[in-house]
Image 1 (cartoon, rainbow, N blue to C red):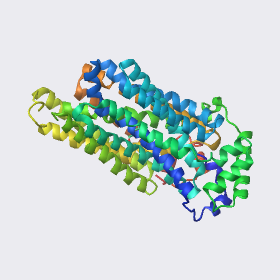
Image 2: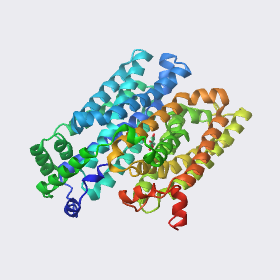
Image 3: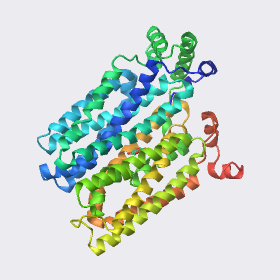
Image 4: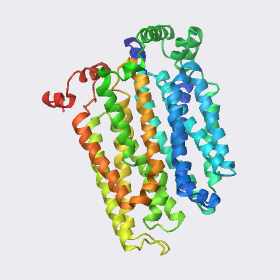
Length: 486
Ligand code: BGC
């Protein structure tokens, strides 16, 4: 992500980056974009019950209402790169904020399921656009030394957004105030718009479209501590090289890049088919099945066991991701996830067979409590591994010239897989049962473990150029093992 703008000169100038007001505002932009993303992911968990009651929606309709945010996001992520290049990063983010706001209002005021679904698609499109444009904007503005932190702040902000959504759900669940729950996401969207409005576009984009003076002004404003002229020259040099080397789509899918592409796409798929968003979206329903009788109890379990734990474990990962390798984190996380999913499957087996789910009796059974604990283990394991690490790896395995396009492919595949899971989760439960559904996620975690163990090489502590050398080996993992670096 913009690594090619890093030069010895800018690195030297970065020694002591000053966090001026404008740079803090860049931080605020990425935090707000992440919050919005997370809020829109999480809020549906508490809203589904009320929506079902208001519209008498079928299971299929409930799944469409839940999952079409991810379809919108899939399209948004695919067009975001083009928009960010044509209109600029700033206008693209403003556009995403406007879309969020319109989508949130459509959802809140929907007279029926059709408008609600359209609102979900519009919100999703905004999520997809922002999920590409905001990290890009922040990465291009951040001093080198802070770039990693800016990007991981985004992942943290997503989990905080999910947590806030759960808190709002919990506060409003008594009166089935689903319209307010969904409408509230207009607030951070408007905030994002207000913060973004006075901001300059990134110097890198100005250089790209030949507006050198604007680039200088923007750089001086956000980073008054660097030598703007030298920095702009570096950016210009990198941009010219970029243009000369522009990669084609055919190259993204060429044999030469097959290994990193398979790894990027594989990680994107496994991050989703091991069930994370089924749990994020349908947490309240799962807790209801596990014997948490009242909507309040379900919402409380969702807020703290899923939302709170997700934030805490992500915080740990963000601090330690560079100390531990990518592989150990991914593999350890998958052991926790697989164990937890199989445990949930077993508990449901007991709950379904005993038919004493606790519903109406005022509290969850032992099996219900075990389910809660297992889901905490699942979320914590995901949040310190597949959650952040998959995105780290996807952003570091491709050569500079194809990175933009290749990351877009992996991101779109990730949204597509998220859509598949959230679109069919309830149907799956209806047709094969709770236990089998969780066993299936557990089985995918085992497959993910074996696949990562065999094919994903360690990338920690290597420069982006060194990472490219990894792909020259026929079997990169074996080569690292032979060299004693694994
Ligand atoms: C995933 C999202 C997920 C989130 C949960 C992210 O890394 O890409 O799909 O909802 O983590 O924290």
